[in-house]
Image (tube, rainbow, N blue to C red; front, side):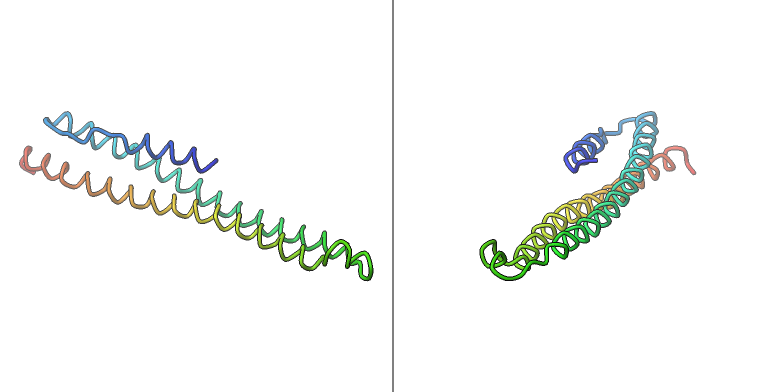
Amino acid sequence: MINEDYHKLLTEIIDINVEVTSIADSRRLILELNERESILLKLKENILRDIRMAESNFLKDKAAVRKKYSMNQKSGFTDIIRGRSKNKLIRELKQLDSSSKTNIEDLKELRYMIDDLIVQFENLKDPVNKSMRNRFGN
């Protein structure tokens, strides 16, 4: 899934009416929070899978680039004219590394956001549960 899709899903999950005026509203809120929390846990699993996939793809791409330049081991006059293949290898590896790092860092940031949202949902549920217990006298 693309990072923008994750952001859209998170904004939809965050959009929740937390105003409680009755016991029915309290129950509705707790049910919604539980449902959204389970969605967040599934999203977190997907993000962890995407992180592993991005890391794996990075290693595969890195190996492919190294293999490409190890096969082109030319020396002499053509190497001087075209430029050093070692310099091209280094440049390509740096580009690959930076793009991979930004993608993985974005996914990790999303994972941290999801963890934070789960904690916030738990913090929202506690006062609602306490108020319901107080109303029922348990």
